[in-house]
Length: 356
Image 1 (cartoon, one colour):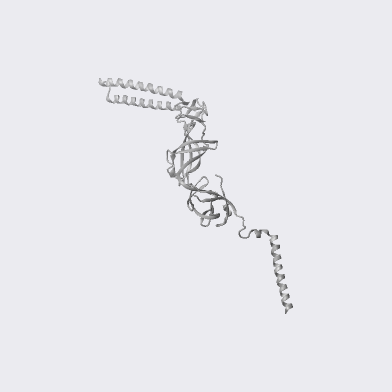
Image 2 (spheres, rainbow, N blue to C red):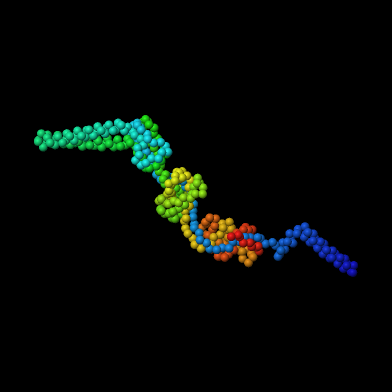
């Protein structure tokens, strides 16, 4: 019996020794096991930002293009030869300036002939009136003289109208974009003579979504920038807001008028129109990148007592990469803005403050 108990004791001591040796070997091969022991885990370093209420303006930027203030296409009302062409492409023209003459010489002769016919008809009528008073001309003859006089007047008016049409004048002050006629060319009715643009002012045309069109009223002031003129901003005024939305895009056309006294702006340029939509006072704003998506909704982490606390938030509008927070945060909270992606609720953290 004594030998049996001694043998069992020896076996027991040997088992304990083997277990201790295995533990030491595992610790030497995997030192992180010891480092992961409770109380020794390294804290996640995060950067926080203290939340304070701020004022901000909700704005939207729309992309459009420039149009001339006015565009006119002059077309011939007569058939005939262009006797003179007094303009060229790129010329500045004034309202009422003669650009070309079409059969003016021939139509002048026709007008003068109509004048002579009217003078003869007037003379004949005056003579017949005197003769009628002496009962030398019948009532019928006097009525015929009166009718011939009226017809001569109408003929003269028509001849003058045709003559006026033969001198084609510019209806606006502007710049000639296209010349469609050469001297000596025979023109048909409706043929293009010139296209004239008024670019003393220009219009920026763009489309606004239906949810934002309520902010745009005629006379509203906006800011416009251009791809072709980097670093420059021009003020503009809303000139027109479309009455009906496009069925396919559900957007409304809007026009903004801009002054172009210096001639820098040209039709067709790409324009970006920035419109302030609404003013907000004393709101909490968080960077969009600080917000995480959870099944329950949008969430952020705040630092509280050296630990990460997750908050589900309700957001409103966004402005320049920031989200308005309606619920879930309070002024003074320390919002985690760096390192939040790897955090778990309640985790100890090493807090650093973001540079102002």
